[in-house]
Length: 351
Image (tube, rainbow, N blue to C red; front, side, top):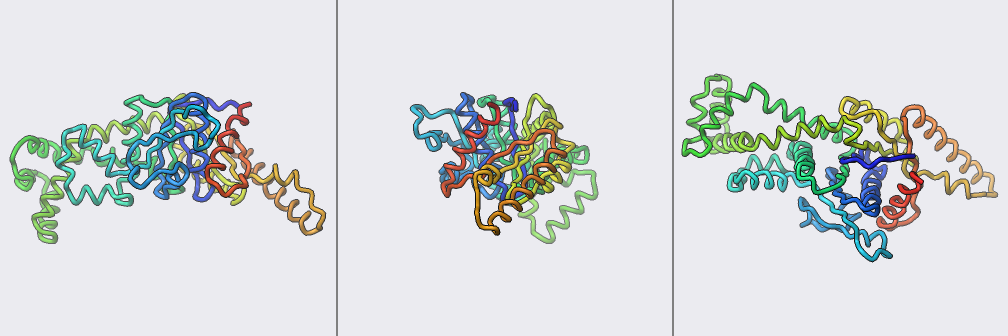
């Protein structure tokens, strides 16, 4: 089966199916084949850190990864880089590009950019778009959050569009006057025509005090001044639907029989993705079962049951997905062994 390399490759699926391990193996495989690869994990579980031997202080920073970890016989390590997403680090990059690093000392922005602060998916899209625009990598591989959070990631650009829609134009006009001036944020807002906004701020001031209102306005002002970084991420969303731009790998597991859940995810993401996608059935036991010849009657029944269930799952997969890739279970306790074996499996799929 031909698996053409694309600018972006997305790995998605439910939890516990080996999605991160499979995404890592794909990155290692492409690096082995001469591609300069950036592997980004948006998954808060951060299993990528364990697989690649990254440290806590690597979070949010692009870190070179030695492919010798997976192929000790290599003389020269190939070009593989990893990034554990950090919303706060992404915002720092945006602020630095705009000369606004001093504005980051804002409690509201700090809360929003915590791992579960509400901007994780939006920051992920901005981070990917940033690296696409700079063009330093042949391929960017995304290890996305499981289940519903993956759909949230896809819908991030809609949130951006909604935030920067016409209802905010008037606010931004006034906040624009604040940029480069010594005007008080509160005075800027007193000029607003919208009584709804005035009521909101008046209510906030009564409940939280004037200091919080100043923080709120400053946070909005920062977002206004950096809005081109947010709106440019919308282009990434549009590109995802083009076959020549992206590969989509929906990962499921023969072990957990989660093909139905993968189908549900695909249906939910259908409006964002093209139809030339792959289903990866991970942890298949058939290669081992075919070589297992039990004598005991109960073990024979166990083998037969396992084969029947796996074959039913693959039949269902074949009827609902155009292209299905199968990866065998890896019988090793070492994460590096899993990645190495799966990386070699990608070559076998195309041989």
